[in-house]
Length: 625
Image (cartoon, rainbow, N blue to C red; front, side):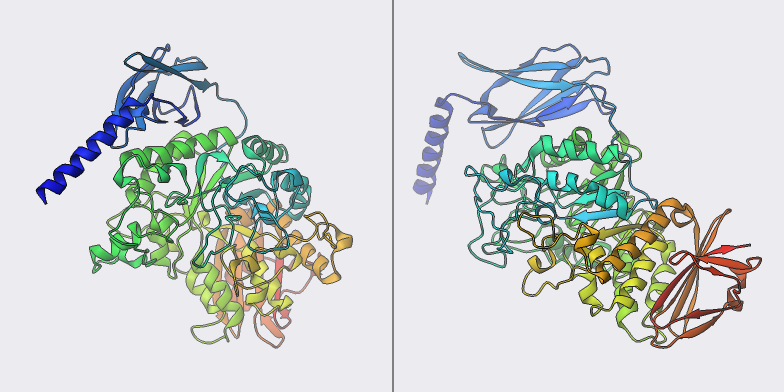
């Protein structure tokens, strides 16, 4: 055994000597640029190329100091710690690397910050529209596919391949979205997903059209329009007074990512002796009786066999991800971040990353995806009032608990503990959140069955759920196409709930972006959503007004949004029979009001003592004294 070990050591030493005999190259520097005048003066550059870690680096630029060069296990990497003084001028730094007689010079741009809107945040005054760019609209068929990418296919007729949607297509439809009442766009990830089609497993022959398989953090996928196209989209949104939300994925990368194929060090990702998937069970994070092994498997287990789990406890990994988030916000004028698979990330890292963004952009909003089924579990991942040992600083999160309650309210029979009682119960526990208005509410998303299919294609239920979403607390988000009654379930695949928006692609027989292309029922749905969304947009009482709810009775659920200038009453009847609603028990909020305007029909009600609620209906009344 000793002889074998010695032979192996000699072999490895020979390989290293051979590698060091090769000339060094610098092929990448990440970030690809930076800015002067940032609040944090520190910057860590990742330098990559054959033997890039064997060079001795210097920088000679006024106001910029190279504090330290870090070498790691892989000689193809060096990490350079820089500090940038507040008085530093914009310009091009020359990074000089020397080894023996070889000298390499790599330019690196320090740019001046511009005054375009960025980090504006989203609030309860906003209505976020979620788009999967590949499936929304194709504005430039010339960028549908490229022969120099690993995935060279695009076919709108194949549900598992790319279809060609892009930024240009979205820009062409911004007026449609603004008319609907949308104030912000959240796109599923737009970073480079240059990966081979999977040959086995649940995603076999399915392209990364959804965007969650990153292969290069500093490239926006050119099939969407690249970095320039994304900047153009942000400018078009801001010119209309709208905002841009980017989808972050800190937890994992594609196995085709360039720095997974040639890792800087063994613990760049969380490795296991054999493939180990996450438990997906978040209870182990806050369970006072929980086992450390379960916590480790949740956090360090891989999401799938082809999505390596990033080791965010590695300081170089943490710096890389945090700097990328700041770089993206600055370059692309982002206003908020939705954070994918939040509960799988190292919690200390997430607090550090969140704080870095909030320090640089104090108004920015951050809301993560933690699929949970109870308010206490959900509160653990955001700023809360619960006495957990770990204190999260995440301002908001996707409200999966209320999402489940919406579905229960529309699908369960009303009883002591079921039906519309579920919404009341969930909101009654809002005290566990530091600010429940920062939670992002929804009826569906790209990972769920579509809303209309969940409620049995029942248009009356559709209107009730939309009413709750757009009049209760929180920041509502919407999934593309639900305003024109798109439906589908995840059986047989996710592609069934990610179909193309009709009219967004060359050759479409119908154009649902236009009134003439929609059926009467689709137009009615569009106008219903538009009426409530624009009313919400224009009335602060639905943004910041207080919420008072009353115990549901006989399948009815009544609540009020109110402030010093306005009171809105929302009443829904989930039952199958018309109810005459005696408003006497709502005197706490209705005393002094003598009439009301029906927000949905503009009709005036002159008698508020007994309000008729037809079966499966929603009523939104602006009360008048």
